[in-house]
Image 1 (cartoon, rainbow, N blue to C red):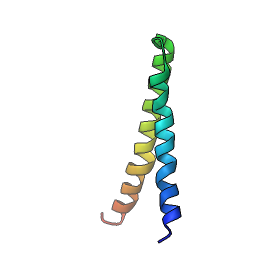
Image 2: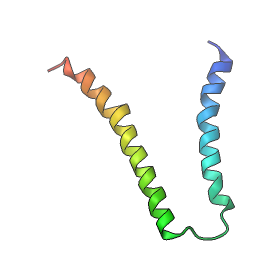
Image 3: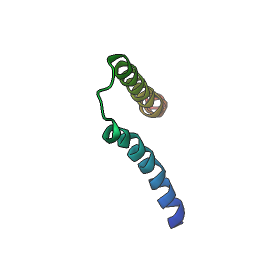
Image 4: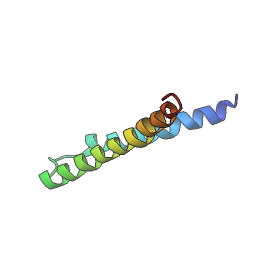
Length: 67
C-alpha cells in the first residue's frame, strides 16, 4: 500500500469540505433569500445526482442478474 496515495485520497475531500464550510464562519451578515434558495437548490440537486449515479444505478446493475 502506498501511504502517500491514501493520504492524498483522504485529504482532497477533507480540504474541499473544510474550505466550503469555512465560508459560513466568515460571513458577517445574513445571506439574501434569493441566494439562500439558489444554494439550497444546488445542494439538493447535487445530493439527488449523487444518490442516483452512485447508489441507485449501480444497485440496479448488480440486481439485474438476480431476477
